Length: 82
Image 1 (cartoon, helix red, strand yellow):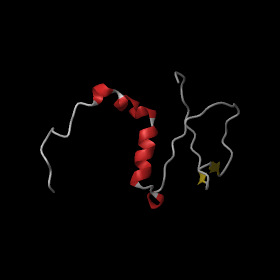
Image 2 (cartoon, helix red, strand yellow):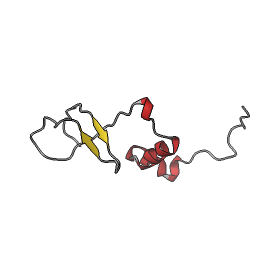
Image 3 (cartoon, one colour):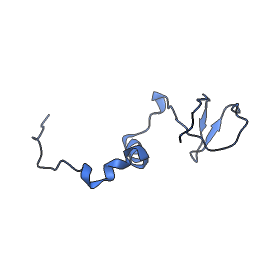
Image 4 (cartoon, one colour):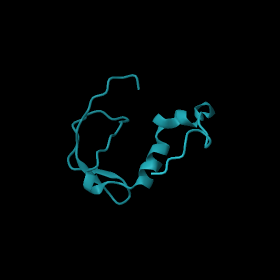
């Protein structure tokens, strides 16, 4: 995405099928793709399993699939008994 990005704040609700319904129309006159960042209140925090699933699908972590990133094994380090 080599273009300049403009941020627009909006509020809404995540519905049963995980679609987002905005409270108000957004002030954009053009059509096209957007990038969305969702901030969730602490009260409705998602579980650890959902965080792991989201991180595993995030392209920001795709580099970890490279075998060259596997630099540690089970034999590295010392056990921690806390």
